Length: 394
Image (cartoon, rainbow, N blue to C red):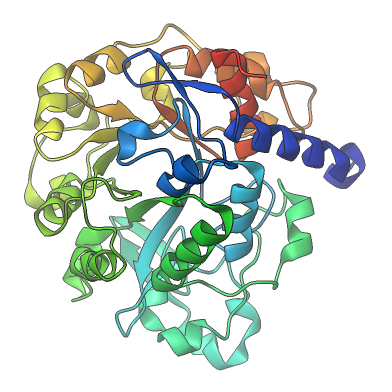
C-alpha cells in the first residue's frame, strides 16, 4: 500500500482548518503560567501587533513550522512556508547557507544533491565533488560552488521521497529562495494577514563557512537591519548549533538568540575547532545553561534531551532540563515533531509501515506536558491540535 492510497487530501484539509482555528482561538498559556487572550485576527489592534511585541508574547506552546510545512511540501520553499502559515503555524523556520557570491539562501544543508534537481543539469556535472563539512565526508553539489544566478536555474524537490511520496507532486514547482526574498515575503504576508510573521533563522555550519571567507553572521545582521528585524522585540529568533555563532550575532543585533543542542555526547563543531572539551551534556547542566543565558534567550534541544528513550525506543522519564532552563531564564523550543511512525517513539507507532502516521497526538501530549515553550514540527496543523488538547482550546 502506498502513502497516496493510505491517506486522502481531505484529512489534511480538516487538520489545516482546525489548526487555523487554534491560531485564532480564545486563550493560550502565558509564559508565567497565567492565561492570556490569543490574537483575534479580526481585531485590528491585536492583529497589527502580531501577538504583541517580543518573543514572550507568542502563544505557548509555540508551534514552529520546521523548514516550513515540510510534512506536506518540499522543505525550504516559499510554497512550504506559505502552507505553514495557512495551517496556522506561529513561527516559520529557515536554515541559511551561502552562495559563492555571498548571498544567503534557504537550504537545510549546503549539500543540495537531495533537495534540488541539480543532478539533472549536465552543465553542472563537473561541480560534483567530495568535501569534509564539520568532519563529515560528503559527495555531491554544494551551494558555495554556485553563484546565486546559477542556483536560481535549479528547482527544489522533496528530500525524503520514500517517506513522503505525496510531496513529490510538488517537485520542480519552486526555486531556492534567498533569505532576502523570504524577508520581503514575510512583510507581504504580514500585511495580507494582518499580523507580524515570525521567523526562526538558523546559521548552518558557520565555522566551516567562515573558513571559506563566507561568514554568515555579518551577512545575516545586515539583512536584519535592512528589514527592521534587528531589535530585541523583532519577530525573529536567531539559532545555531554553534554557540559562538549565537554569541557573534548577539554582538551585531539585539534579536533573540537560541542555542541548538543535539545528543548529550556530541560537541558543537566550533568547540571541536577551538579545542573546547565541553559536550552538550555540559551545556545542559545548570552551570552550562547559565552560561548560555549570558548571551541567548533560549535553547533548542533535541526532544531526547527533554525525554530520553530507552533501548527499545520508548519514552522514559523527563529530565530536569525544562526546569533548569526556565530557572536560568531560557525558553525551550525542542525539535522535531513528525507524524510518521519512523520518527515517533516506539509506543506511539501504529502498524508496520514506517511511513504511515502513528499516534502523533499521544507523543505530543507527553512532550508538551513537560512545560516546553514550543516545538518544531514538520506537521504544524497536528502540533497546533496537540497544543489545543493541552491548553483546553477547542
